[in-house]
Amino acid sequence: MIFKALIHYFFHQGASGKADTRPARGVDLSRYLGRWYELARYGAPFETGLEDVYTEYKMRSDGKLLITNYGTDEEGCHREAHAIGTPVADGQLKVSFIPLLRFLSTPYNILSVDKEYNHALVSNGSGSSLWILSRRPVIIPDAFNKMRDEAQRRGFETGELHYTRHSRR
Image (cartoon, rainbow, N blue to C red; front, side):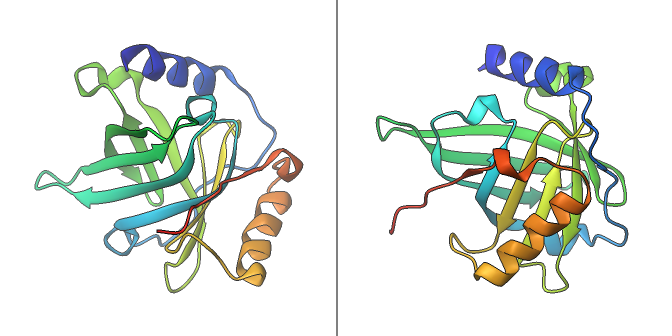
């Protein structure tokens, strides 16, 4: 797990994308909490082979977030990873999968979220990774296209998106 986190850190910090990764203004973190399903991603080598990916965000008493990522690997095994998110600015967190080594944290920028907090567009600080998220494992095509179009407008290579499969449960 530590090895994966180190790869994650160096992969994200070393990349220099051309995309606009400025976080959205006015993000209400309390409304962002809860479960988010990953609908599409790119630039996330630590997720290679994972499907049924979703994340739970819970507020801790110290104002930081407990972040738990879930997914199913190619053999059908359940995988999860835990992280701590520290709010640093409006729409921006620093996320660490190794709490004792906080200097290995990586930016987590909420680029866009709809008014109802049902759909979100998220990236790291360099623009080398992108996630399209939804409160449900499926999304209305118009809402998905709006998120994808926002990513394109910001300069992300949406042709590189991996569309995450969600099995019916």
